[in-house]
Image 1 (cartoon, helix red, strand yellow):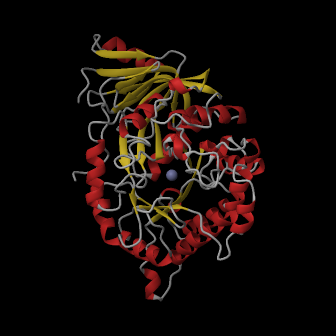
Image 2 (spheres, helix red, strand yellow):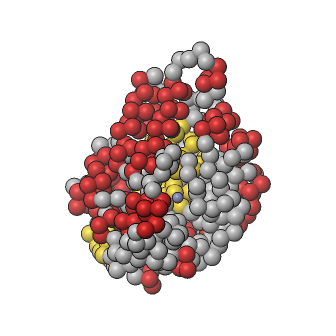
Image 3 (cartoon, rainbow, N blue to C red):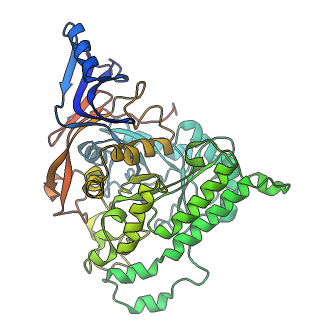
Length: 482
Ligand SMILES: [Zn+2]
């Protein structure tokens, strides 16, 4: 839907790739960014426009690109009681997120075939307040479906190396991976890994069972760092095989142009391995973003440490688990060194009955999509980061991962005018009343956060202002015609 006018969004703190400045974003009637302008240029455009350009002046409020959250579990259809498209995207709009990318599992059916993608898309159509992209899934035996899903426009594929927690999304092993890489060869798509892999001799289940299951430490011991290391080692082997100029035909099927991404890195110990894998590809002249080896971490790993988690409070439970304070500090260090590439929510809610006080039995997943931006800023601003860090790690990083960089994730001519006015100095407290996602249980209740989203615009159109989301969903599904 076209806008009635061209718009000029102004701010004394305009955040672009080149820094923070006084200026504006000129938006055409299609809702596309036409030009980034200085204050002087903006004044001239307004003076010459005969009042035909609508000016939206945010004053001292920072003007940023909308956030892209590339890791959200919407769960509709099939587990709509856990979360749905309307509630998840309304929460996103309130949190300054203009694009979410839905994970392929926890909905029924999972997004593992074209048919299943169509079912999901029809549940989402007309019900999304922000734009929505989709991940496909790689499970045992669906390699023949992958190319059709690429054609339909999925941003990439997610797979598990350990049980996913739901029966309809079985984890894969090395043989399945070879098939998946072969099927995706030449597509430039990305394979994202839930990177936890059990040892042949897993942590003694008997020993763990004897411990108090309400203690968070008991759960933490059941999923040690070693599981993440095992998984990333396996993935690195695949990346290395890709690059070795080998005569062995069977290894050549694994294509170098399939990108590899690690979702929700919790253990800082895996990062050096990832850096090595990336170096191998860079040495071979890969030019793709980050050499096609990328990794994300999540707000909860950057916010909490295991020692802070009260007994019996499984709203903190997620997989991989939140680890100790040193680990958290190390994750920040790696993020600031650009060894981790993006920060996402991994919003993964469920109904309250599944969040029992037994940390071994409760559903693993943390709800936070609405608060991601403020969570990040609360911590980042105390670590000397400026507003450009938000755009880098939460907008352009995820957009690059999802191949949306020519459409989303930055304030640049030609991109969708997805914008937010953000008050970086204001604070607010997370309460049940302000939460827009379906189930209100979250470990952030009662927390004071820094940074308030005042207004959110999707393709130049206002979708959220001061606590209110516009009535009619105006988001698009980021798919090709299917
Ligand atoms: Zn997830």
